Image 1: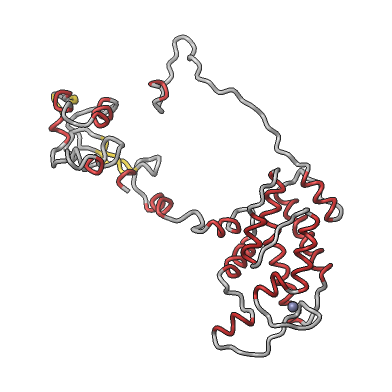
Image 2 (image 1 turned 90 degrees about the vertical axis):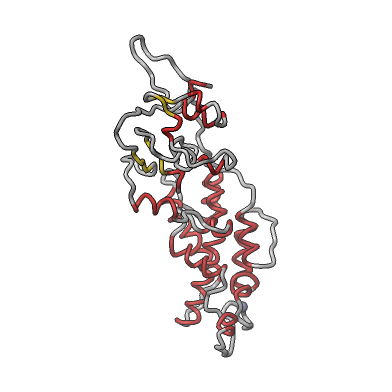
Amino acid sequence: MEHWLLWDLSRGEVAFWWDNWSGLGPLAWRFPEEASDARATAFLREGRWDYSALASVPAVVRDAAQGSFFCFRLDPDTLVWLRDPSGVFSIRSTYQLVRLARARSWVFSFFWHSFIPRKLSFFMLRLVNGQLPMDDVLEKFQIHGPSKCHCCVLGQLETMEHVFLTGQLASATWAFFKHSLELSTSAATVRSRCATWWLLPVKGKVIRWLMRILPILILWFLWRARNMSRFEGRKICGSQVRALIVHEVRMLVRAHFPGITVLGQWDELLKALSVVRRALTATAVRWAFPPTGCFKLNTDGCATE
Ligand SMILES: [Zn+2]
């Protein structure tokens, strides 16, 4: 937090080693051996830095002092909050600083993303954490009952791995998309299946997007098929699940890549997505002298390098 609090020196009454006036943070953190309770005024003389006094401090501190633009006067030193353009401290900007804006796990980062609908992100969160109310999960909470899956000709025990990976409906659905994408991957668990697809080295922005969202859509519609069968008594066959997935992909492509024509069957859609390439343009960037009579203020220090 101290790195975002910068002192704008005037009287120089701040602690030279403990307050962040240099932009380097509290200097005592870097140089605990040299640190003391001295104020900045101890290094000032006649309204300027006293370079003979600064000669005893580390070179990086001396450089920071020499490169500063303080106007030493009788006004009080001012504390500037760097997280806000106004320089005034605000809870709002502090919240942006301390909140965790990224997913903690790299697996989570694959389904917590702005282009993935929130309902799918929450669904995946529950799935990877084993929190979907499947029969094997309910057993852990002492809810025992006859368990029978709705995805096979001959009913089997309903487990997460069965419904989403090894059951007949799941196997057929994964196999359809796997063959259409010419993949040769295999995985023993739902989680590793997703990770395998997500990490495949594929070319093209749209195909990378597809490889990221397709496993999630497959799992989502397998889950919906399971729920419709169990709670509504409506059996959904493999071709219907595939059609629902393809329809959803088409809708999402239309939303995220408006320039792509998404008519036709899955094969045609896949072909259309495969040929999309990002248009590359090159722009030369260089420093240029200002016109005669004008000045440029280099604020990032590039002029010194
Ligand atoms: Zn089954």
